[in-house]
Image (cartoon, rainbow over the protein chains, first blue to last red):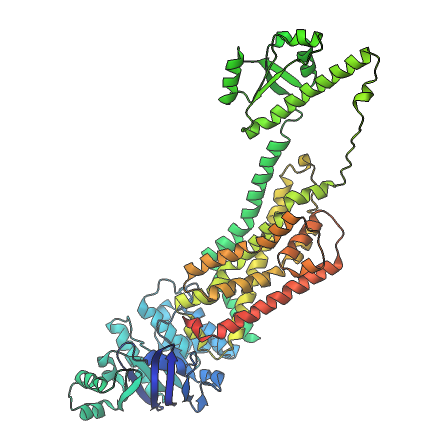
Length: 243
Length: 392
């Protein structure tokens, strides 16, 4: 469960986030949709506590990301934008390193690592060094790494970037599995089709503000557009440009 | 604590598999010093003492004009060889480098001697040619000795003691020990060791910030429920271990390299026993913390691995500055100087090589002061690691 209330963040003169509020519930897939530079990554970075908001608050399972950053981080699994691996470690070692840093007890680490390796279907290259992995392989390993501690909340920043059709499909399948398991999944994207195919709820972000927050059907109705892409364009046009 | 060790062991595994790190830490750093040093020593040996005991081949023009002088030269370990036929040819031979030095004895030599007029002997040489300098000096010395001998004979004939020509008897007492003389040349050893030490941890220090960021592994790492301080401590510890390995390899290489250097011939007997090697290791080791923290700090401001390498190379040079200043000013070790990292290690090492008694206070201040500064720098690194700007 993720609650964001009136979040603001500026970098110098640039107001990246200007009063964002939304909630992402357990057992649902929430998509952060917006053009490049809308502030999606900044919101996610605040949620996984590497950036501090100027004002407003964000809570993960009730834990404030500023006051209890460590507690909040325990509740999340993240796939930051352009997530990188350690090239001299094998896929399995990369995942196990994170498991150790999540402070999992040594007895169950091997078992949990194998579980996520099965879950993401990466047995084939699990014991190879990750140097030279394809983008699809890297994303899968990064995902496995962020799921190894069974987090309740999963934050994915443009996860399908650079993936081919098959890899995108298996990513969607995984996200649906996580939803079925009652997890709270929040992911950002600028690709309309992807959001439409997956999300229960869509938060459209433009110019650092929420342009619209509804179910895909609700958005179609509100904008009077049948096509989600037209609806998206209409929704972001409603937002005034940043000063 | 657990986090620190998790990071520490991961960094070790990672870097022991990285060919680039291994090359610089275990090959370049430790070998650079000994190779350069052996080169310099051998060069200076061949320059300064080469063949002082061997006969000097000296071309003399006009030998027939001064048979006694020629005989004298021959008796002082000089081989008289055939010179170019004329004075002009001799000058040309020296100019072209065919001969380093040529002695020309004019025809008037014998007559001048007989009349007690100063008899001219020409020493043709090229002052700009440094390799000729040694031979020239030897030839001139032999001629002067002959001149003194003649003067003494002339006085004796006239019933004057040659002693009147020597109002002063200058006696130099050199108190430097063979170990002490080594220190001048071996002073640069300390920099080689510090260089080896720093290169050992260079890649790890860069990797902690710039490397992780470039690879995109920094952001997910910072999303983990661990304190950032612990991440940076683990990384600095791993860098220190690599530096210690690099340093011990460097010291070992030197130990064996010194055995093959003709130091005794230079009048040097450095105290570089296995025990001294171990002590030197302990003296130098605290500097690893300063170096690791300093390089991590510098790297954290850079945008990429390449940029970091450029700036961190500056850190490699920084420790030479205090050493250089002190070498020029010829400062004696003092307790106050022991607070300065790199300089204190240098002074302790020089003392050790000179085989001077170890000053316990100096050692304590050096180790304590260096570790303290290292801890302060590590703390700054941890602060920098907490910045939002770290993600770039």
